[in-house]
Image (tube, rainbow over all chains, first blue to last red; front, side):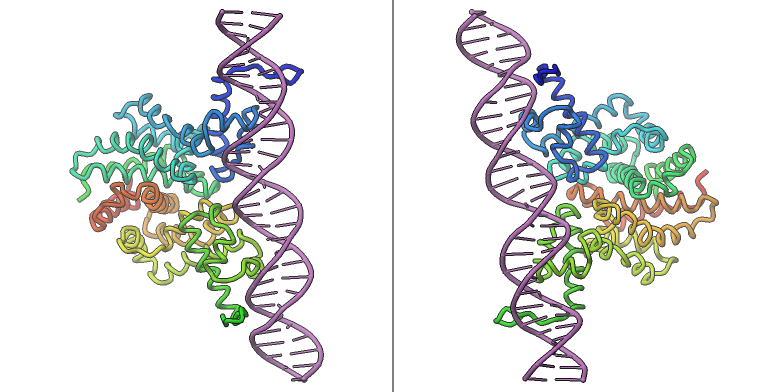
Length: 187
Length: 187
DNA sequence: TAGCTTTGTGAGCAGTTGCTTACTTAGCTT
DNA sequence: AAGCTAAGTAAGCAACTGCTCACAAAGCTA
């Protein structure tokens, strides 16, 4: 940005700045309470660009939500997914990462739920289900994911509650044991 | 309501109508996406009355959220709470009840989170914790409640997913077994 | 019946929001 | 350097939102 007010053009950087700003603000404030002006200001661009690049606020959310799930799965691989999900779940200095996005996807409109289902939940449930040899493996995988989601939400609601205050290792072990009971034999 | 347009006065009925309408609409659409006009129309009253009776939209949410948790606990008693929560969780023709309100409390502003913690979660966690003899009983109780919450949310996100489609009895048994593993000994 | 209080109403305020439009200008090609 | 395209901008639109205000009138009491 020169003093004259004109700004260097870099469409890829602009696009990225908007995505980054949106991700952070949607995570902090939820979809509805994040305005396009907020996002543009945080990205250091004019708000009209949000519409130029993403079409609408909803589509921006869709873009924000796509990929992170796939990225985690690619990083970690399905064998270590559960451990990794739980480790991240209870990590103290966690970045505002995937779990927060899961929560915030729920506060968004229809497109967010669709994206969540297609791009975020399905690969996770597939991987979690593969850990259970039971015929109803997918149900069990869904229940595990639901639990993780619930913990994220519980923490958001009660930042000073027991879950937030728990020793991460201990909490992780508690959940791991119960989840194993669920995924293996539950009868 | 007479043909002349004047309406019979019944402050208690008006108040109740607003609470009922708000409960339903908050559950259906979330706090932010439910407008005071929506609520007033659904209640069949003028929107100014919402402010007269409840002070603000937020305070209305607080009023909506107060009590249901206590009511369920009073109905059921703590001995049967877990079973009842799970039964209701998977009931097919469930009314839009307490669980939906839990979800929607999360989409509301700060007062909702406070009310949720004070009036809804705490009694539940107390009761669930009492079922575990462990020193970290409250943490375990919180984790159980988080799971229930997660299931509610998962179903909202994926109305056609495995959880929503599951045989209620079966799903209930799966969770009950895992929860027992969590509440009893987890080491 | 008059007077007062409480409940109900219509209208409107001020601010906000997602989005559009017309214009500017950076950056590239010829 | 001229011309064109694409990226960036300021301003503004129309609709919406929580909330207020002045008034109407139901309902009660003396």
